[in-house]
Length: 390
Image (cartoon, rainbow, N blue to C red; front, side):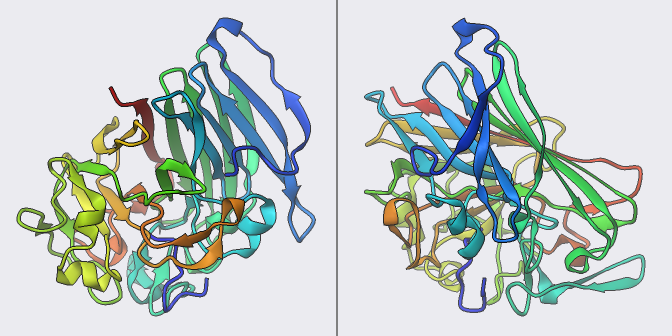
């Protein structure tokens, strides 16, 4: 879902800009060409330092993660000619992330997606939330976890993988949510071109938790010369959650058969997003819907999405433990946001895949529960596997 500049909402470069004090971790097995390096990315307006960790593998893939928003600032992967390009929307420097509205490849929490009318009840008590997209709460509130400077908990490297773990403590009452939640997210890169994202969280009071990586990807490269949606998409799903005019699920899944939402076999995203359908019209002429993944919540990641860009020769497969996959085709991008290389972000220029629990689950008992109680551990694993087409 949704870089939200929406009517009701106020809300990587190939190389890092302004990195300093770079320190290389021990090389380990040089044959693996796996590495992790740590540096300063910049300084926030409040004086806090933002760190960056860059993970690299033997195949020419790299990912730079910054502590602000636990964000994927850059993700580089070669095309079929072997030329690497950045594939994720974002900004050239820290000021872009701090001052520009949006959810550009950030970690979203405490609750990804929308909660209707900014309120929910637990054990008979109602909790009013900050309204980040009136009349609803979107992506955790007006100051969600994407706007926090996470702490680098660890940077690790072995012969065949490298990783960084960020941690964040969200106090009781944060944006209206009950309970002090301690969360962490680990990004791990291996030589198989897997970027694995693992989330964990605990609480000291009953609460709700629904985390996601808000990807904004264009397999043709960033700055973009082509639409991200000019690619073939397959989704392991037979139904979506239809929405009302405020993009809150109505509660009853809609089978995708016979609709533009049908990606059970590969289909061009642009053609489907531009089709005539009442649900596409509600999302400003495109997809901004949660797909009900086959298998529901699983202990290990299951296949969910395949995206292939024939011109660049890049492909992406996503597997996840989550029951839902929000797909967003950048319908609300109007050229108001200036991204990497000075490019203005416009409709269909990126496509988002957000593995998560269902939107508004705290208010819809028929949906899989997103409740977290003391003594329980929230966990999610999602794998982004990049490859070159044959």
